[in-house]
Image 1 (cartoon, rainbow, N blue to C red):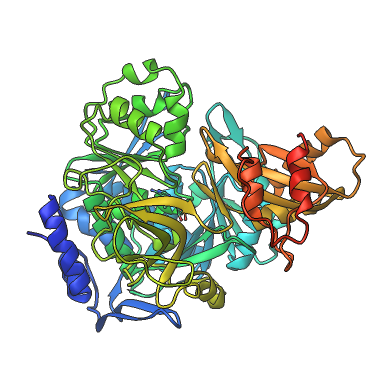
Image 2 (tube, rainbow, N blue to C red):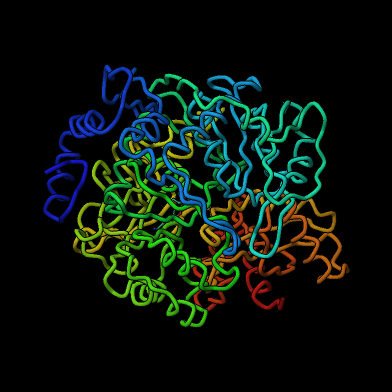
Length: 633
Ligand code: PRX
């Protein structure tokens, strides 16, 4: 039996037990057998959740790109590493072999170096899903620079906030992005963002949509001429296992986004291990994760996890509905995809379309289906299982977070029996606990509580960039000696976990985490607005949509016009994803005596569930509840 590759339920239980009884031995064996290190660790793990400080493979040395690229060259130089499928089906797919990937990454690494980027420097990557995105991310890792990928759907001010927070001196972007039939002016967004980022000295621009764009002399450079003339050899920077590999921003319930910092060694070991097991990847398989590399799912399960296993990973530039709603299935047939990993929101959207979009294609290559990002409802699960998996591809409902780096709770396909809406069992090394509101662990099964993790795992984020105190406050202060996830969960009679959703002020819309505070702050910037509160309400496709309660200074203003202006502001400051589906203008908001908005009540009203509004006795202004319910929008 190999600890690295679990093939059945008995093996899972054995491996899990070992991973809990002897975590250090367990991870040490995996690290030793499956990866290339320049120097061995002195100590497998040291940790203290009260500080909090977590170190895996202390003083070991490595470079993750040698593990993801160089070591496969002997046997897989010509095998496809990244299979790039363009936005338009009429453009040919690009099979990027491990050999070519090596050369492209090294050329990009040399370009970054020539622009003065050194080990430890932060590089902002604001690129669409084109090969240059993968090359840039890996090139940063090659030279020890810390990549900060910003999803290319974020607005100029969201980009600026992230550039300033991590003090990036260089931005890599493109002239624009294809998005179905539309194009997006990425460079224009960067130009706008850089007006408030005086620290940025260099902008490298990949060509994708070939439009005329503004290039600022002395700052902006076209990428292609630089990479083409660069050497295809670049010695990997030797990194300490605990050196930061990347920063990735995620929304918090309050304040600015949190730059989660991930390490090099532990992150590599854990993403590679989980990729192998959760997708049961075998040599020769073609694996496809539809996420964007701008999110953690893309980092861990388009790039690092698959490449560390020498896999073939599909990278798709487009969207599921272009040129029609059969695009995903067309790609599955065309590339004979074996493992397919997507978000419930995409499944729900496609399930609404005519089944002929599915039936047109041969999906018999599929062996494993995955979902991530939000709870999958039972109806969507069955549609996925029946129509895409033909009832014989297990669905892995994978629960994890930007902060966890890798998948935490998930079935192992062909081993763990699945139940719709259950993420099922913790992966090896993961020790979940459910806590009650007083911070006590709830023992036994058939219980519900707040989901915590009691023991460190190799890919846990090590800090929040520039704000270790916030890291401690957010994740390690609610419960003693445990990492708090922000999610609620239920454990059934068999010990299976079902994630019930966020228990904080984060709302997940179409699989994207949105903090309420930054959206409310934006709305409040409108001159006509006095105060606002945002809650989520159930939505057929997005899972949740946003509902805004807004108090106006000037109640005489044109309300439809105001709704438009509020959404325009949100689009510019946060991004179009955060636009409100409904805006209710109101005279008051339910508040506790300490001035906190009681969102529980607003959630009920937004969801149309006003029959049992719950206890309002602690409110400062209980009368406001009825008046909000009486208002029409
Ligand atoms: O609430 C959980 C939900 O997504 C949150 C993490 O979001 P993010 O950091 O953007 O990472 C998403 C991709 C890993 C979690 O706290 N979530 C994620 N996966 C699931 C889920 N909720 C239910 N079931 C899941 N499988």
